[in-house]
Each structure stands twice: as C-alpha cells, then as structure tokens.
Amino acid sequence: MDAGPLRLDLFHRDAAYEGRWLALHPREFSLLWRLAETPEHTVSQRALLADVWRLPFEPGTNRVAVHIARLRRKLEAHGLDAMIDTDGPGYRLIPCRASQSGLDSTPAMRNHGCHLIEEDCGMATQADEKRVESTMGEDGVMHVRLNRPDKMNALDPEMFAAIIAAGEALMDRKDVRVVVLSGEGRSFCAGLDTSSFARTPDPDEPKLTDRTHGDSNTYQQVATIWRKLPMPVIAALHGVCFGGGMQIASGADVRVAAPDTRMAIMEMKWGLVPDMGGYQLWRGLVRDDVLRELVYTNREFSGEEAVQLGLATFVADDPLAKAMEIAATIAQRNPDAVRAAKRLHNRMHDESGPDLLMAESVEQAGVIRQPNQIEAVMAGMAKRRPEFGDAS
Image (cartoon, rainbow, N blue to C red; front, side):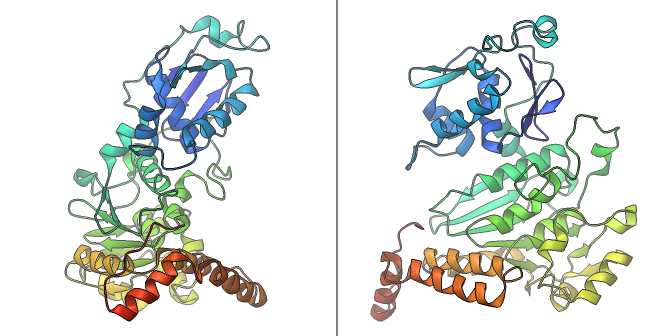
C-alpha cells in the first residue's frame, strides 16, 4: 500500500521512503497502516487500541499516544512528521502533508496522488485475524491457532506477518497466564510455502542479516517471539511439523506431540541451513551429536521419537487436550513467580554461574511477600483454589 511518499509493506511490517526502510516497530507499523486505510479521516484512540492491540479499553499507560509519538519521531527524520495529525480524540493521516524541510517537490509527491492505493489489502489486523486466531479462556489461558488449514498452515508472507503480530500482541498482556499454540486442520505447520517465495527478491527488502525485530530478522521472529513472551507457551503438535514449523514449535516452553506426528528439521533437503532461530532454541533440548545428525540428514521422525530426542516433552493421543491440561495447572500458580522462572530459564545458557546465582536472588526478591505470593501461601494452607491478580 502507498501512503503519499511512503510504501507500506505488510510482509516486512515496515515502511519505505526513497528506497530505505524506516525500521518501524511492529505496532508503529500497524498504527500507520490503520491510519492509511482511511486517509484524512480521524480514527479514535479507542478504535486504534482495539485494532492494533485488540484491547477494549486502555488498562494503564496511554500506549496509543506513546507509539504515535515514536512513529512521528521516525517520520520527522525524513520531514514527514506532519503527515500524522492530532484531531481531538484521535489521529488522522494526511498523505500529502510534509514539513517545509522535505517533500513538497520530491518525485514521489509529484508522480503519485495524495493516497494512491495499488493493492487490495485489508488492514494488518484483518490479515492477522484471518491467518491466526486467538481465544482467551476464563482461566487466563490464551489459545493461539495457526489458521491456514488448506495449506497445512504453511508459511507464506501473510502467515509470517500474522504469527508475529499474534505473538507481539501478547507481550504486554498481564492477564494472560499461559499460551497454548496449535494448528487448525490436519497439521501443526508444514514449514515454508515454497510457492509463495518463488520470486526474484525485491532489492529493497531487508537483508537476512538486518535485525528487523530486536535480535531477530522476520523469519527468526516467527519462532523466537514465543520464547520472548513473558508467560509460558505450550505447543500442541499433530500431523506434519517440518522445517519452519519445527522451529516455531521449538520456541515454545513445552511441546506435546501426537505419536504419529511427522517431524523433521527439513532445511538441508533444499540445500539450506536452519535459520529461523532453531540453533538458539535447541540449546539445552537436544544433544549436540543428535542435532547434527537430524540437521545433516533432514530425516523424518515421529512424535514418539521426538520425546526421546528432546524435541518434544510429552506424547499424547490428543496433544491439544494434554496441552490445555498442563496450561490449566500452570494458570493456578503465582503468575509473577511463573514469569520470573521463565526469565531465569531463558538466561540459563548465556549467563555465568555467579551471574545466574544473582539473577535467582533478584527474581526471588521481586516475588516474595508480594500479594500473589501471599495468596499462594494462604490458598495452600486453606486447601482452596487461589485467586491471583494479574501479573505485576
């Protein structure tokens, strides 16, 4: 989609100006995309909150205003900050407006109309909802479902964008205790949809070495986002779990596989190396020589063998039911302690012994004698169901 001189790319979730990416945060991009859908029309903060964060109300910090301010700062570097206009209770995009220092004579402004739209795209959140569905249970368990069943949830550009958006939408959710990640239809995820990438790369696309999402590129973020989330993630695997699907599953804290799940680290079949975060995520899961054999040969293995190899935690005839059972148990634990434990687990393979010992003490100091920890003790003594507040 074009918005005045900006080119909005849904796959990379970034905007380009004169051939250069602006390096937008995913939520900055989603805000810009939402405003570009209705140029020169005011979009209320409530509507932006619902569309970008999927929240019915603002639970605390005015995140819309914060991200709009950050977006404006990035546009200001190119003389484009005046494109985002504050209008009473909301914001609007004025594609033709630019500050005096910049764009009134650029080729982009001369050759394009105020809001030329070449693609028939829905806004980012609509694409996200189509490809990934998220449902919140009363117990604080969020069920995230890959939803491209006709293609066995294979990964095309829209799927990459939707999975990343679904994960990032959970990053600030204090009310979510556990995430269960599954795939609709016959399979969890068949890996890369090679047909959608059989094209000449756009020279303006970020290089694989560009860190578009903190420490990760887009392809890595689709898997590493699940490890980065503050709450535990449990993956339920069935059908096929190949290549990129295997790496997405590896981003979860716990994996439950059906016995006959077909699994493989498939990249070597195509003359490639696993590059969607697998090597980072497999540390501590798989013995080094075992991992080497699986990568070098790209051989297929079952869900039952995956448990022996270290790539699955449990095997179950109904992996989704087992995943939900584990999630329900975790949801009844102090959410502050659970999140602190995940942070410690994520640091185990990077920290020195002394640093990890200190990290344990710091996390414990932040949890002990806090309301949720006291409630855990009181509920245990009374032999009743705990009533925890949201994570702090």
